[in-house]
Amino acid sequence: MAGHKGLTLAAEKPNGTGLKVLIVRARWNAEIVESLTSAAVARLTSLGVSSDDVDVHFVSGAFELPFATKALLAKKRYDVAISIGVLIKGDTMHFEYIADASTQGLMRVGLDTGIPVIFGILTCLTEEQALLRSGIGGADKKTGHNHGEDWGQAAVEMALLNNH
Ligand code: DLZ
Image 1 (tube, rainbow, N blue to C red):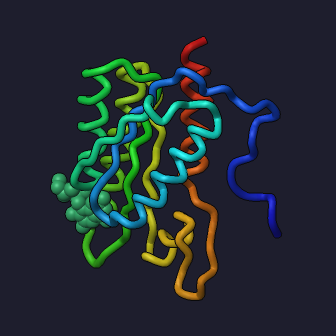
Image 2 (cartoon, rainbow, N blue to C red):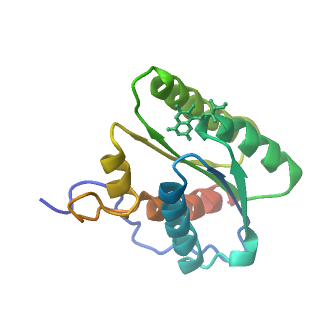
Image 3 (tube, rainbow, N blue to C red):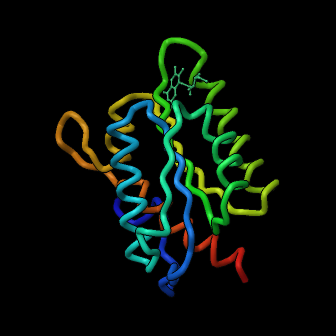
């Protein structure tokens, strides 16, 4: 049944005019990360963020996201960061370790810096799950919700909350 899962929008549309946003994105699973990033940027700009105020940096994989996000937040004034990556479970324990480390790491960066960090990492058991959650669509051409949209929305909301 539709409408029971996922992000419900706040009654009032948040105004992102003037906000400076850092996006850090991984190069692993690049096509999926690209689709998520595009959706996040589209939502940011639809809420008033200027595309000139969105800086995008690339890192190797999701494991690098916490360190890079912290380092880049220290270099320039940003109101919020979105750290984007896609983890797809393989045959080894890599998935579990990287998912845990990057989740804990990104939470720590936000709490330590006082600048909100949006958790833009998909942790998927299959590639099909990742394709569906990034709006690309799975093998049967069924398209799912692009979670990047939610991350753009959360970024504006958290930046405004933190600035007040
Ligand atoms: C090593 C690795 C593996 C197995 N899987 C992924 C993945 O699905 N998504 C991702 O973003 N990165 C992956 N990586 C790379 C690690 O995140 C990291 O870049 C390397 O271990 C180097 O620190």
